[in-house]
Structure formats: structure tokens, C-alpha cells
Length: 381
Image 1 (cartoon, helix red, strand yellow):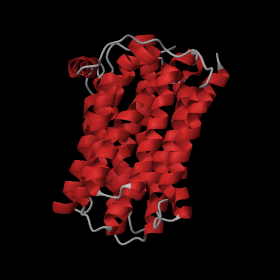
Image 2: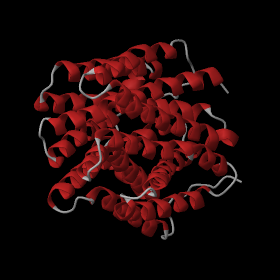
Image 3: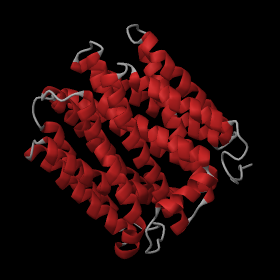
Image 4: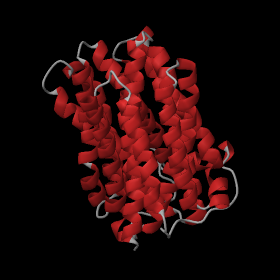
């Protein structure tokens, strides 16, 4: 196994997580300060989802044309340019377009990076090494809000830190090999429907985690502000959720190398449902802090286990296309989640965000009770 390449790809993807973690909450907080409501902020949060759908469609074609490593470097540099323009052009309509561009560009990075990592790892270590990727990415996002809290939200330092990270990280990929090959073909929604039909539990879980991820970085700070917390406490709560996501991914991944991955998957769905329902009840107590940890851990566990199950099933172009479908599902979740939570928070209930997650987790639990929820995936011995 190419360990140096694994860690180089891992580091380049982590730079994206840190760049997003330090810049995306700043966008929402800036809009809140400009007087925009929850729905307008939800629309802004949903824009990258459209970009995700576009990026997933063209990723396989572009990877075949430019090569995986070259395309990842180009996209990281383009991401740096897009985040820099957020600081230079503070306008809601322009930010909508820039968030769309960021969605397209960084989706390609995630598709290729996750495919590259899953192609590199050996089966006996797949759970732990994929979980290390998930845990490290969550930690990079955790560091983003913490760093933003230290830098302050009054100036544009958060944007420029993101720019610097995405300018430097492509250099780590120079000379690296072992990337999956890809064919010059686009990924259509008809293909996505076939993927979701074959692996419905994974499709639902990825969409749910995408909604979770988009809402945590963009709407959770606003939710906490609306519940009476200060901006510093709101950012600390966001960071605590991501801590939960990060802390338990490695234990979950280790267990996935020895125990039934489907059983672990079902357990994460149940914990996510229960923790989501408990948030409004415990929000004003000290118990909310460990509850945020469970909330993040259970959601992150669903995504990590989904990647593990995908990696054990596919290779090369099929693996790239499967991760493109993961990205498409991510786009669907990112699009629906913030819009639904933003509209619900403004017009139905101030607790729409956790209640929406509870409903989604309940739907996944019901789906898991059906035979064939994971398709014909062979469980490792």
C-alpha cells in the first residue's frame, strides 16, 4: 500500500474541510448581520448543492481527460479563487453564484479524493483507514469554526485563511500515483436512480448526512442565536457537534473491520433519531453538550459506513462513478435540507432543524427493516 500517497490525498482533502469550516459559517453570520432571514440564509446554504449535482455529472469525464491528480490540483486552486471572491465582492446575488461555483469545484475534489483513498486501502484495513479519513475531515471542519472564533467574524480573515489553504494543498499531490482510472462519460440521474434502487439504505443515509452537514455549518449557528445564545456559544456548539462526528469515527471504523457493518449502520440511525428528538428538550441544560456529541457521531457514522460499503464493492471507473453518485445524493441532501429547515424555522417552528433530522433518521430506520436495504453487498468475514 502507498502510505505516502494516502496521507498526501488525505491532507489535500482535509484542507478543503478546514477552508469550508472557517469560511462557510462566516457567510451565514455575515448574512444574519445584514438582516437576512432564515429562508434567505437557507437558500444561500443550498446553492452549493446545485453545484454538487453539476460537479458529479462531469467529474468522471474530466478525470479521464486531465487525470485524477491534475484535476484535483486545478479544482483546489479554483476553489481558492472562489473563496477569495467572497471577500472581495460582498453582495448576496454574487455570493449565490460564487457558492454555486464552490459547489461544482470542491465536489470534484471530494469525488476523486474519496475514490483515490478507497482504491489505495487494503480490505483488512478499509474500515479504519476510511474512518481515519472521515474523522480527520470532521476535525478539519471542527478547527474551522474554532479558528474563525479566534480570528473574529467582523473582518474577512476567515475567507483569506481558506484561500491560503487551497493554494498550498495542491502541491502535496505532485508525483503521487495509484489513482483510479476513469472513462470519459457523464453520470446521469438515470444512473443515480439505478444506484439508489440497488443500495437504498446507503442512498438515504448519504442524503441525510448531506442535509446534516449543510445545516450544521450554516443554519445551526443561526438556530443557536435565535434560541438566545451568543455568537461565541453558537460557534462552540457547532464545534461540539463536529467533535462528536470526529471522535467516534475511528472506533466505528475499527469495529467495521470485525463486526457486521449493517448492524453498526442501523445503530447509528437509531442514535441519530433519538438525539435529534432530544435537542429541543435539553437545549437549555448542561446535557446538551454530550447530546451534541452523540448527534454528530451518529450522523458521521452513517456516512463513514456508507463509504466503507462502497469501497468494498467497486474499483476503478465503477468506484469513481459510485462516488459521483454519492456526490449527487449529497447535492440532493444539501439542497433539500437547508431549504426545508430554513423555511420551517421561519414559518413553522424554531426547532425545525433538529426535528427535520429526526424525521429523516426515522425514515432510514424504517427502510433498514426492509429486506434488501443494502442490496447484494457481501459482508466480509
